[in-house]
Amino acid sequence: MTRFFRWMALGVLSAAMLPWPSCAQTRPAGQGQQPAQAPAPPNNPRSRLGLREAPTTNVTVDGSEAMFTTMCALLAAGFEADVSSESWTPMRAQLRDRMQHQQGPAVDALREFYKKHELADAGAMLSQYIWFGLVSGPPPKFTPTLRRDELPPEVITLEGFSEILSAYYVEQHIGRLWVQVQPVYNHEIDQIHDSVSQIVFVATNYLRELASPGDPRTFTIMVEPLVGRITNVRNFQDHYAIVISGSSDVPVDVVRHAYLHFLLDPLPLRYPHVVAVKRPVYDVATRAPRLTPDLRDDLPSYFAECLVRAVELKLKRMSPGEREAVIDGDDADGYVLVRPLFKALATFEGAEPSMRIYFPDMVRAIDSGAEVKRAQTVKFTPANSAPKEGDTSAEYVSRQRKPHPTTIPNDSDAIAELTEGERRIAEKNPRAAETSFQRVLTKYPDQPRALYGIGLVALLDRDAVRAKEVFGRLTAGDHAATQDPMVLTWSHIYLARIYDDEGQAEAAKTEYQAALAVSGGPEQAKQAAQKGLAAFGAEKRSERP
Image 1: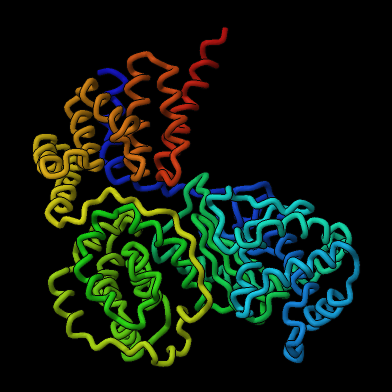
Image 2: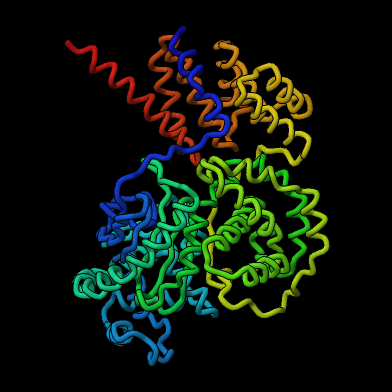
């Protein structure tokens, strides 16, 4: 048996059809990591969150010199100049007074910029600069750590602010001031440690999740006393951040809610065909007046929100009556999938796999027809009703998501055939799988998931010629699966393995490198590509005398 068919026979196939990230641990959090701003070099990494008992995670608790400088500039420019500081912390009140009395050419330019970009809504104004602080690189340049096409719109409206902030930082010696306030920040970070450790420990253990090596996704709790007692939750692409004022204001429910989103948001995107079957229930839910606006045209995010709320009910200490009241409230607000998901979690608790593996089975167990009928009987709360006390959705939340894959057809029959084909692939039944995928292709000739399934059938049949043709079609030309990162990444990897088996080392390396370059590709696939490239290096070393 050739090398190509050896790795195929070992069962890699089914993992690629439903690519589940591995459960290996990563390095300890906070050691040399950039706060969850962006994939950039560390900026004064001082994370204090050393989770001794909890599984290792990509969670950090830290301050940021970029955020501190941004907030100093905001106060110097006149933000909250007329707000009473009676309830402020001493440090915040003292720094505002100091910033307001700053003088110099850079301060003048800063104040002029602020006035030109001032908004009537103080909350929206603060939001712009918090976004800027989160995506800014280290001083003195504060260059954004994301490409322009990845930046939140709020940051783009502040174009030119990096240069102004850089001049302000140098002129007013903000670097020295940052060093002076370190004891305050370190104290707050230390005080937050236990609360955050407990949240991470409970959530990761309940979901049976462990971080994957090299996972670029990050979750940062940023301590910044100058923002005041407003919890700001930010999600931009794979980076999640919460900005809080300090240890006395740790909003446990909000942190847990955001962290559960960090763990669970990828699942509906990883299994879009499974979630799509529940769209009829979602269509009823979108009629709810109080449903968050940005969830009305985003099924994966809506599903993730319902799952997060269901898991929260499992993790909170509540009486059965209190829990039922919360679920009734979720129904009335449009989150009608919370109830069936909460029930389905009971089965998950008795199973062995992690949530990322068990998720498809849990979703498929929900009776869509029954839930549609039940949702149609729910009396939705009017839009003008007061928000519920302690409702985490009332906190300021802003999301910047990656584009969702658009290759899953809005066709329940086609989705059912794709699902059946995947099941048959997992059973290593190529003929039954091919029948299902061909039915989809008869209706949708260029459907990427169905074509990908045919490629996997070719692997099961040990037909390298056909497999190379199918995966080649999915990676290049007019029919390339550019809108489906999972299909595109794994297609490159399978092509690489075929080329490697044929002795075409350079072509194999090119395909592995192309897999690593796919934006939004599954972490397990990226790891497979890295291992493939590393193997070439190992072979070269072994050939040396």
